[in-house]
Amino acid sequence: MQDLRSHYAKEFARFYVNSFPNMPCKPVPSKLEDLNFTEKTALQQWENGVLYQNMFRKTDALPADVLARHLDGGRYHVGDQEALRNAGFISDANSVEAQIEEGRQQLREKELAAITARNEARDRELQRQMQMSGAEKMAQKPIGFWDPSAVAFRRQHGISDDIGAGL
Image (tube, one colour):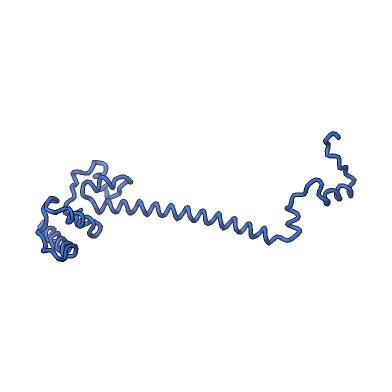
């Protein structure tokens, strides 16, 4: 226990000297109320909140399901970050939030890749259509009933122009 207290004293001193360089270093706080608001906020943000979490976390304040996940190696669920933060597990809460944001970023990247692939396929199809030879273009162009080539075809093969309109 003394080694842990010594470690916390060194880490708190390092935090305090770096965060408040013009102030004399305070004693190592034994409870959260020993710190003012500014010191508490700075400690929560210091190196992702690890020192704050190690010094002030309240394991008994965690809901049972979150505690079980914590004891299972920190395999937290989305939504656990609020309970973790309320119990002083600042570093773990920050880690969960970072993982959530990373997942969201991966989803955005996958969506962007799918959109890019669709756009590239569309562009390739347009490029292919623009490069078609004249015969291919004619083959794909719809021909109207009164188009000169349609009339000539009907004449050549002896087909009537009667479209069955009853006239």
